[in-house]
Amino acid sequence: MSPFKSSTGLYENVAAFFCYLFAFVGGVVFLAVEKRSRFVLFHALQSVMLFAGLMIAHAAAGFLPLIGIVVGLLLSALGIALWLLLMLTSLQGKWLKLPWIGELAEKQLNRM
Image 1: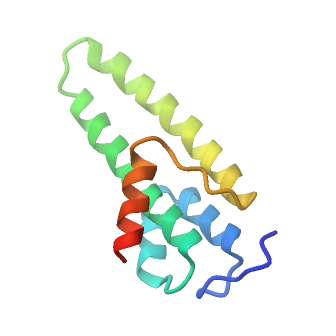
Image 2: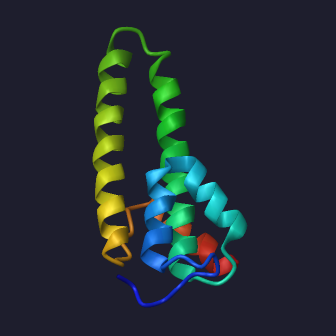
């Protein structure tokens, strides 16, 4: 476990885990309540951006005739795989930065 606690009183790795466990909502909650931990804020931003993007892509796939079902299934599989991977790595205290989304989250974090 990470020896550092976030401003929420939770260990940083546990708070980051909750950002992903509750997908988009967990990220929003920790963006609102976390005041000091860059680790938690990064994972909260990455969670919000990733799962918002997946929700938008999934909704857009619904408008594609025939192939939309396949695209939706692939997006669901990708979402579950990333969800599990990010929960595990955040519990380990790692800064797993996803391509594009992780870069955006890091840039946004530097503006805070």
